[in-house]
Image 1 (spheres, rainbow over the protein chains, first blue to last red):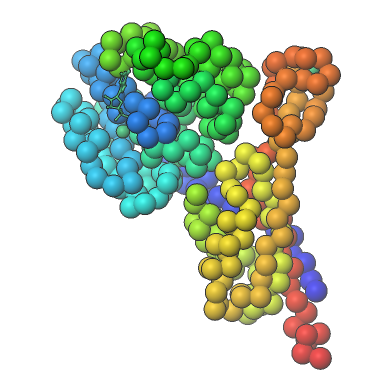
Image 2: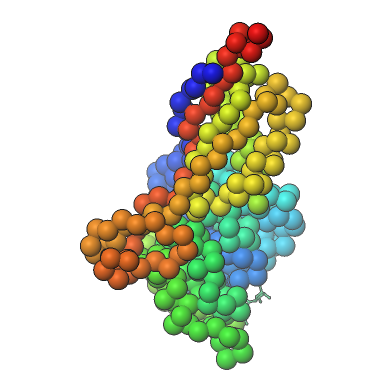
Length: 215
Length: 120
Ligand SMILES: Nc1nc2c(ncn2[C@@H]2O[C@H](COP(=O)(O)OP(=O)(O)O)[C@@H](O)[C@H]2O)c(=O)[nH]1
Ligand SMILES: [Mg+2]
Ligand SMILES: [Zn+2]
């Protein structure tokens, strides 16, 4: 028997492409956010609200990742925002190479912010760098306040937590304080916004933060 | 959830790393898999078995080392392993904890059979 020692990361190829993406984004001064959540937490709704608030001031584009269909891309396109659809045909997460291809179809020169809406899944997207500046994890109140503890990797690898559907708190068994504490226990540096796409609460604060990050 | 893709990546790296003509001699691939890597060892093992099926590498097997989550307290510097995610420091009770390991997904080494030895 002979042994070859190699010490290589299994996802090294993804990481190399992600690094290349990141360099391109930095060269063009684009702030890139990777939106992750379970299906239905409200990623597309948040994008819609964000466009309403920011589209007159900032040049925004979207990469939509979906397992099937381009329904979300259609929703987003209504706001006059450039959108590139990626259909993963069953794939449970986006990979850097898919984003690289998608971004090739965007005019990067004028862009300020790029949102990447990842496939709805709280597990796999945590471990695939796309070249984003940061990950934004969206958790809705209907999912329960224990989710940070159940999906720690996602909360650990994200920089921002959007707690969505706060309008439903009277009807669901979700303790906001506990949710916040659970998330901060996993990742003390998480920036948290409490929002509702239904009432619009918290959206201005989130958009203000985006404005400051962008400049 | 995506172990098939991971198995594919592993095969690719192994083929790149083994001297030409020796892929059939691969017997053991040692991996380090962190608890936070999102990879389930059993399903990775299964997917890998399917992938090598009737290729020349079909005598290879995975040797998976589970890497626990290790954390370090930012307040007192204490490092400790956590199995669940009750992230507070067992030494000082502090809540500012940094994860220092558990995200690993690495190929460590590849073991090859000694071809001449095997023919005897
Ligand atoms: N009540 C309420 N419903 C919401 C809110 N945000 C999103 N929804 C609804 O939740 C569902 C899923 O939202 P969507 O944006 O498609 O989630 P995605 O799968 O994460 O993109 C839709 O029916 C939305 O109208 C909210 O803040 N409050
Ligand atoms: Mg969506
Ligand atoms: Zn401590």
